[in-house]
Image (cartoon, rainbow, N blue to C red; front, side, top):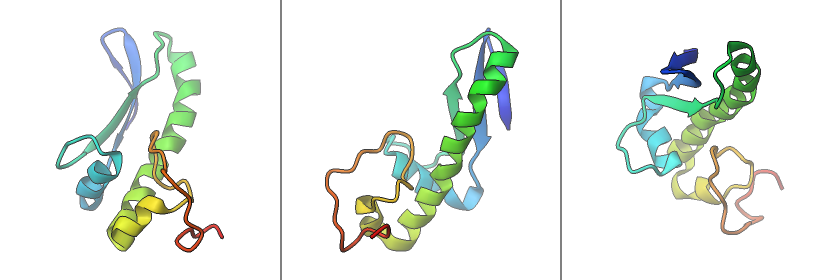
Length: 103
């Protein structure tokens, strides 16, 4: 969707593809069954600044469906992958070279 203004602050909002809504919610571990929108505050009241900040947030949001696809395809094994495909602050507890696709 792009940059939207809610109140006096700008947000970046992106629609999740319908077939990935459940998988994205699982990857984000937010307790929801489905995640139909990804939204993050850009912490600014100025449109020009919001448009500049939105670029990095859009790149981060673009990785969410990729992580969800990996989760659907590989199941629990995708959790341990070190590719960085799981977005938005998900931390990995360990590196397993046998399962990592970057090795």
